[in-house]
Figure 1 (spheres, rainbow, N blue to C red):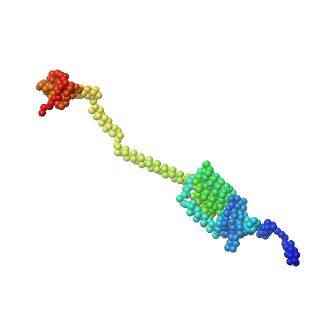
Figure 2: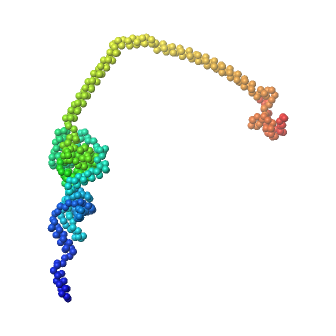
Figure 3: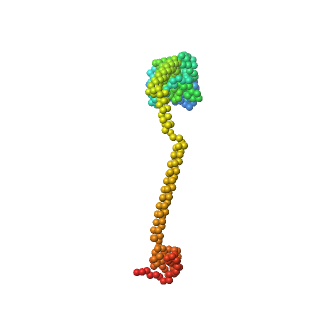
Length: 433
């Protein structure tokens, strides 16, 4: 063994021997103890939500990329829904993944980096929803004039609910159904969307829904900019009034709602009319109706008076009609007299009818006798009387030509005086040339 070998062995024994796992865990421990919790600004990229519910991706700037993880229990608590391309500030702890020698930041908080980034996100989302027709004015529903039940989606604590109830009591008290929700923070958007859809699924639904909260920063109002809330308002069969923030605050739910109120108090004013206004309206209508009745009465009375003047004295008209009736009655004949006259006419017409029938019968009989004599003069019997005879075959058909008489043919010969003689043809009879 050489001196160099001895030196190498002694030098190697002075360095602790570590397994790969020991070294990886040591690096992980050093990272976690050295950095603790950190806030990092960068752009989100490559985000992927695993089937387990954990969120994986990267956060980067111009010169570096760091793996990013958000465990399933922390994802719903993020105030902003992460999307690729967002400029954000994340808060979490530095760690590593020994199996792939990667260091990473495990986050539990995320916020947009600056007002400009948040405004750009909202503008992009607004354009996307507008292109889908979510904000079209044609689909907006009219509010009922006087609803029986008003649904309110807001926090059960705070001044918003009290302001709405106070203004409703002042104007026209109505039944109010409250669906309590968180109006900001993790999970608030899901609660608001669930409330809107829940009111629509009730068997007895409210006539109008007010979605309300008080003022706040842009980040505080983010729940009302989430797609899940905007689409719930869009899908609602019940008219929705948006009353989020103060007059200068604008959220995406304002574009989708059927009416936008600048404040929750104004939403209550939109929901119901003033009772005094309705009473004044009823009084005005009642007064107009009364005036119309009086005017119609006066006009009808005037018309009757005009007609009466043109008709004259009714008693005089009755006298004239009575006189006409007497004249008409005087010209009437007794029914017995009319009956006797009709019977006389009937007898006379009966006699005329008998005479006409006798005359026609005599004429028809005379004509018939003449036609009979004429027919008799045309009869073949007159020809027989002049010495001729009629020859017929056995079937009684006349034999008028010589060639019809065949040898052996039975024939009947009829002479004058209706005498008939049977005979048989012996030789053919030749016709005269």
